[in-house]
Image (cartoon, rainbow, N blue to C red):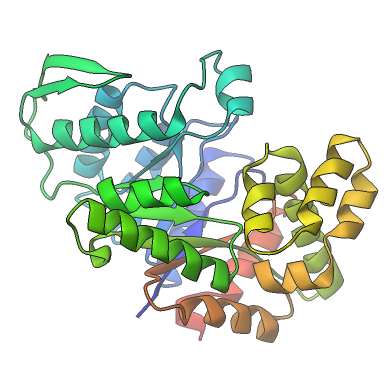
Length: 334
């Protein structure tokens, strides 16, 4: 059975308490995990600590913290601590983000994101084992580091994000899980082949990798508003968040993603929105009325090899929009 999880919103969060309340709502509604992104607002670690202390059963983790602004050793310490605070419910999600964020916001050279992700995953896993870390990589060389507390039991999984075939293959080879977004159900099936190839290279079973796909969701009484919010979100990600999401759509056969990107980059936002047509919305998003949104989620859940669907929300969604959507698509409500 496919898990249903929540990707907590970054925009509709006036206070830390409101984010914790979302997590409590998700727990009460039967969701399996809450994921908190870390962008340019509150840091994920502090908020997740609050969530851990004020929930009881739901899993929790960041999706994602980037692999550049914290060292792998610090990420390992953080994962160990949050596993303790949450009584074993923590899952660490990491990824390289993109050069816009890493170079412009953090002032760090982006370098080779695949190599950095692989080395980060390996070091974090070593740290969490409780053994002394001896690591000689290209980005990191460590000697003598060891946790001065008991290693977490169970050891929390280390899951990664990635869009392209090589990034997903890396997840299959080294990580405990993979998070994907901006993928149709058929697009997910293609990426699962990358997971299988990576697992084979790592002498592992594909089932060892927890596959989670984020789906942009908005279920409102005002169906037109729900569709508009989903369209705005899609245009922003394809046009304004680097080239990763554009390229992901092109790989899936949506050549119009090139035009969406170009229009956004030229400052023609209205044209970019127009180019996100109904087919793209229907294929990528669960937005509009409840029945069609549930049908979209079910198409994802029918993908063999997919372990979890993450219900996410448009960046322009308000608090009431988030709560209405979360409750409409809750496992306990079906």
